[in-house]
Image 1 (cartoon, rainbow, N blue to C red):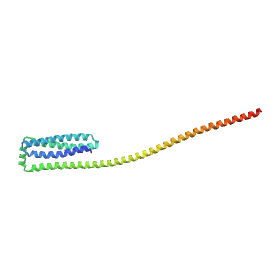
Image 2 (cartoon, helix red, strand yellow):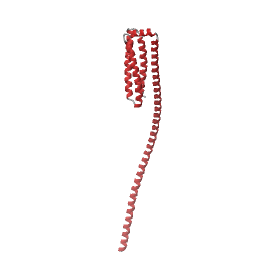
Image 3 (cartoon, rainbow, N blue to C red):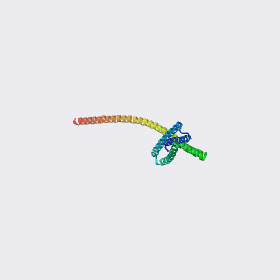
Image 4 (tube, rainbow, N blue to C red):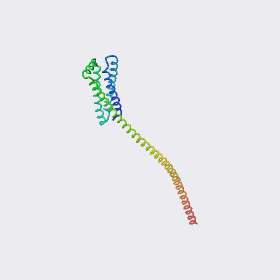
Length: 222
């Protein structure tokens, strides 16, 4: 469930409950400035509720199919609830609203008052239930967020340890490379010395052979 959708949902439930109470209060007021102000306040709240419905609709349609179906189902309930509020507002704001209310009260005594109170209580209970559900989902989301954060911290710590191990291994490899370079230099020097020694030995042997040949030639000639 989207936390954004739940935020809009919580705002709408609170606003819906408030508008329902205001409509009931306005229905009991006589025509005058006070009622006009109350109706203007309710109209502003209705506009705000429309905006929240549109926001929830856009958010729901951007979700994954599983979450999208749940959100759209809830959205249909909220749209129906808002339509009922609009009907109630239209009835309250009509010119003969007070007369109709008086006649109904005279005919049925306090029956309608009780019915309205029951409707208000039912709406309030439904809104409170939705708020509780939203709060539970938010708490669950926060719990999952904390668990995810702990896992992320653990992964970062492991990566840091691995980085230190790799840096240490890299340092050792650099030391090995330096030792290999030194060994190469020593082997190169030894190879040069061996080559030089071979030339010297070869030169000595050639000189000895020439000397022997000269001696033999000298003896044979005398």
